[in-house]
Image 1 (cartoon, rainbow, N blue to C red):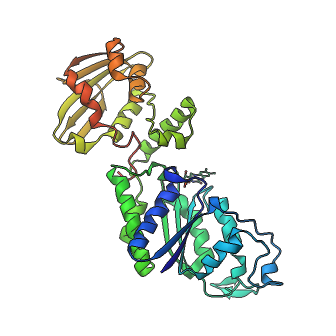
Image 2 (cartoon, protein in one colour):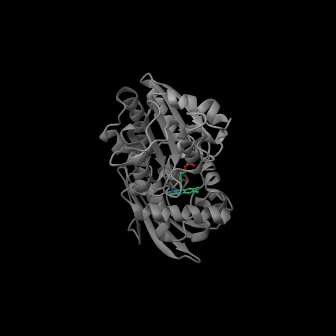
Image 3 (tube, rainbow, N blue to C red):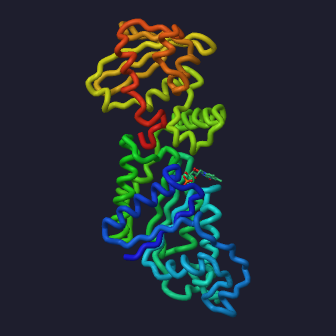
Amino acid sequence: MKVLALNSSARTGDVSKTEIMVDHLAMGMREAGAEVEIINLKKVKIKYCTGCFTCWTKTPGACIHHDDMTNDIYPKFVKCDLCVLATPLYHYTVNAQMKAFIERTLPTNQPFFVECGGVTGHPDRFELPSMVVLSVAGFPELSVFDQLRSYVNFLYRDRLVAEIYRPSAEGLKVPTNDPGINDILEATIQGGRELATSKKVSPETLNRIQKETNNFEDFTLLGNLAWKTCIAEGVTMGEFQKKEMTPRPDSVETFLILMKHGFNAEKALDAKVKIQFNFTGQIEGTCFFDIKNGTINASPGVLENSDLTIDSPFEIWMDILTRKVDGAEMFMQGKYSVEGNIELLMNMHRFFGKNSGNVELTT
Ligand SMILES: Cc1cc2nc3c(=O)[nH]c(=O)nc-3n(C[C@H](O)[C@H](O)[C@H](O)COP(=O)(O)O)c2cc1C
C-alpha cells in the first residue's frame, strides 16, 4: 500500500503534537508493510487557489500554478492508495496550510453538477485515494472535533476510512514514562498497522487513542498554572515544554493537585512515608502527603506522626519546586526548616516528577 501523509502543523519536532502522532501512525503502517511518505506542508510552497477554474476548462485536470503542489504533491496524491491529512485543530477546523492543500485538489473534480448523497456536487475526474483525517487539539473534550468531523465527512464521504482525533494533545511528549501517554502512542502505532492491513482502525484502538481525561477540573487548573508560569517567566509554551519547566502553584490547593499528578507510583511502591508542610508568608496553610504502597493521599491539614515536617515560606518552597533555587542551599541559608527524617528530604524528589506536573491525559 502506498501512503501519502500530509502534516500541516506550523510547528516541527517534539513540540508538534501533530508530528508526534503522524510519526507513530506511520511507524505502525511501515511495520505492516506500507510504503509511507510524510510531507511537511510547512516546508513546501502551496500557492492559494485563484478560483479561475482553468483546471476545469482550458487545461482539464491541470492547475495554472507551478509550485510544489503541482510539481510534487498533487501527482503523489492522485497515485497513492491512502492519504492521511494530519492537521492541528485551529479554530475548530483544519489549519490554513491544510486548507490551502484541500482547495488545490480542485483539478481532481470535473465541473459538472451531479446528485451526490442527496445534494448537488461535482464528480471526481478519476478514482481518488481513501482518506484518513488525523487531528490534535489543545482542549480536553473529544467534542472539540465535532465541526471538523462534520466537515471532513461531508467532503470525503465514502472515501473517508478513518478519523483519529487526540484531545488535550499538549500533554503528549516523547520519550515519556507516563503510562497514559505511552498507551496513546502505542495505540497510534497499532492504528497504523490496522490501516495498512485493512484500511480501518478498530473501535478498541480508536478508544485508546482518543481517551479523554476524566478529570477536567484538574486539567483546567494545571493548564492555567502552566500558562501563568509562561507569562511570568516570559517563555512560550514550546519553550516551557522543551525546558521541562514546572507550573508554579499559586495556592496550597494547586500545589497539592500538581504534586498528586506528578506522583510516580512505580518509584514509591515500597515507600511508607508521611510528609507534613506548614507554609507561612503571603500564602499560609498546612497540607500533607501520606504515601504508601504506591499511592498518595495529598490533602490539606495536619497529619499525626509525620516522618518529616517542612516549615517554609510558600514562595521559597515554590522557588525550589520550580528549580529557581537549590533546595539544599536554601536549607543551609536557613530559608526553611525541617524536623524529622532529613534523608527523606533529600530523596523526596524521587516520588514525584513523573510528568513535570502535567495533568495525566487519561486518568
Ligand atoms: C491559531 C490556533 C488556533 C487553535 N485553535 C484551537 C481550537 O479551536 N481548539 C483546540 O482545542 N485547540 C486549538 N489550538 C491548540 C492546538 O490545536 C494545539 O496546540 C495543537 O497541539 C497544535 O498542534 P501542533 O502541536 O502540531 O502545533 C489552536 C492553536 C492555535 C495556534
